[in-house]
Length: 330
View 1 (tube, rainbow, N blue to C red):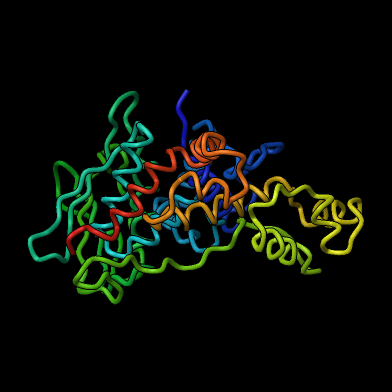
View 2 (spheres, rainbow, N blue to C red):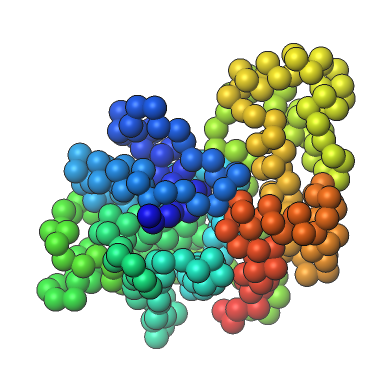
């Protein structure tokens, strides 16, 4: 059985619910992208096939536009930190290698620094579906645009036949290819980019701020207060009773607020820990042992095990990818 990253599957589910209501199978639960890095491919294939059949290829390409509404995950943080296309693709490729992913990308930069070619392929097992290729290139396009690429254009380049323009300066072009042809080859070009690393290459940019979690109801502001309290003392071994006491609630009352917000305390705590760990791992002066204690884990082994389970790669691998953004030659 194939697997897909829970963060990507969650993005597909959220965008499907937002723009194509009714496609989600009855009784199917949303993937838990906080507790586990991977989920079965079944739901992904079902939703992508349904979206394509009902709304065409552009609807799949546009799924990536929801990344700024997605909850914070180390994966999205890395991608959004890589504001130049070549840096993003280099980071993505490193993550694929560390996670031993079945799907991989190759890319060739253009001679003038304002374009590149991308090949999305399968390293082992069944080849990538056309809908999966569309999903990945659409995600790249959305992040490139957010990173400041101006005049961004994208062409699908079949192995035979003319190129097909699918994206032009911020808009998807109306097209409907025969998906019997390969869709794993793409050519991108752009006029300029607004945001980039300084010439020294010694500082990474500040990624856009993502919400801690993808969605929850917080009309009372109690969840926001909970996040603030926990962040201020993250090394504490938080229990919901401790938090309730700090906020001036009974434990039962706070639990009721969490239920009304469609949120679970353990998920919130885990999300905060992973968010802070991701930020601290970008600092080479912090040891992984220090980070584990700062973020409330009992020891570095527990931290590494939990991080790998939730993110898909180890803390040291994540640090390697994050720090590579500082030293890649512009």
